[in-house]
Image 1 (cartoon, rainbow, N blue to C red):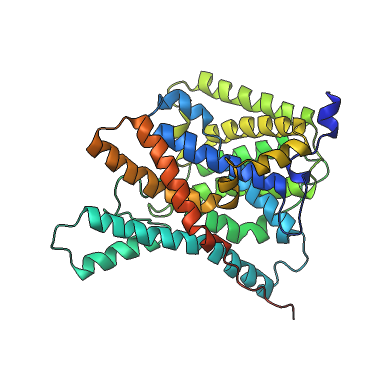
Image 2: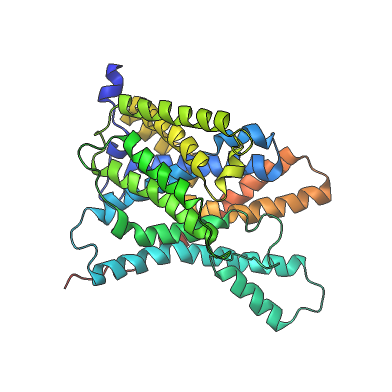
Length: 368
């Protein structure tokens, strides 16, 4: 093994302030930039063939892994986290931080839909139905109340809220004998079994997404609890087994298994789980070669800073940025590449404008 890899800090052990972990902030910012700039540029504007591009849809498992790690570093290691008062305090404070920025976005989205679909005959009942459809994070404009790409990314908010609410109950440390591939086997079997079940249409996707991403949040919690516990070799075994599992599934069931991860992602199935394990193993190997100085340099990058400081807000407002610039592109006959650049610029501007909402903090409940 390269000596630098054994000595370099990973993202979880990067420099910490009393309230922030710089490594996690950098990872979160990079993921938000990847989603907004690359993933949705390709899949929303068709800037590249989506089949091959789907092999780069790795972004959501690490987002939830960071959520689990941040929970451990912030509150998860404290005793009494499941006491009713402490839990409801956590739930209220975290819920406000997630829902308030979402509420601001969806109210503007509802207004945009009303403006572009105004026919001079809209009623108060229709306006009320539109607002109700948007403010519900399980519906986010469904039922004919959305337009263009305003709501395409909001599926994330419901599972994010649910996984956050469950974290105090499900976050556990890994047993001493546990290896990453063992966790993957347990998670894969659970996802495979879940795929055989069907729930009510309104909650089927929510349940399957929440179970899938809860696994990654718990894994992040485990990593934060023991950031140097597993070696590069452990992650290499996981990578090889995940790739072998994908290949075996495709060879054994060629007509039933797809390598198009866009097809496997909604809702996430066992193939997407193996795919996510492979990418996660690759990332966890790669971060062992990143030095603390490099992490600090990325944190200071002016290109990355907006995504670090306002990543969630920028994520939300990309729906408006891409939709409005797509409309302008259609009317002006602009190329999709110009629309893409303008959409990124507008998205970042709107995200930074509304970012103060995600920094609102309710006071912590005083211990009895």
